[in-house]
Amino acid sequence: MSRRKSIARILAICCAPLAVSGCAGIEVLHESAYCPGDKERQALVVRDQAALGGLWQSLRNAPETGAAPSVDFRNQRILFLADAEKPTAGYRVRLASPTLTVNMGVASLSLETAAPGGMTAQVITRPCLLLALPGGDYQRIEATDQTGQVWATAVPAD
Image (cartoon, rainbow, N blue to C red; front, side):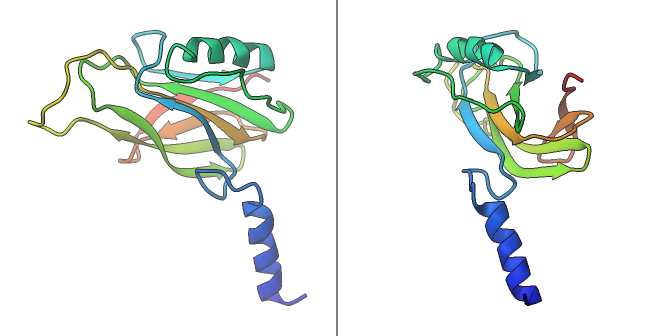
């Protein structure tokens, strides 16, 4: 097999389960500006289907409906990220580019904020993101913002 065909095959295999977020296999399960929970920033690895079901039910108060997605926890890790409460509309947590490294999952996040001096609604928001990551022997999962600073860290169970 030629080198070009080998590379094309690797890319085809990588991109076969192409998710909204790209070739790394990170799938956005839920994204909202209005999520229930603590007032502080939160990063949580969901460990099983029952825990995902409970989290999903709390997220249903946001615009999401239906049953929690079925997840193969042997081959995927579920990561819940939520920002602290914000006093105005316009805040958002969005997956910028999925990047995973050996023994440490790193998902880069882009935080959008209201433009300085712009008009915004005065309402309490708490943006959040629920991600399905490819399974791996991660020591920790770090989410970084658009400046490269660590935004949140989660440690999977052993």
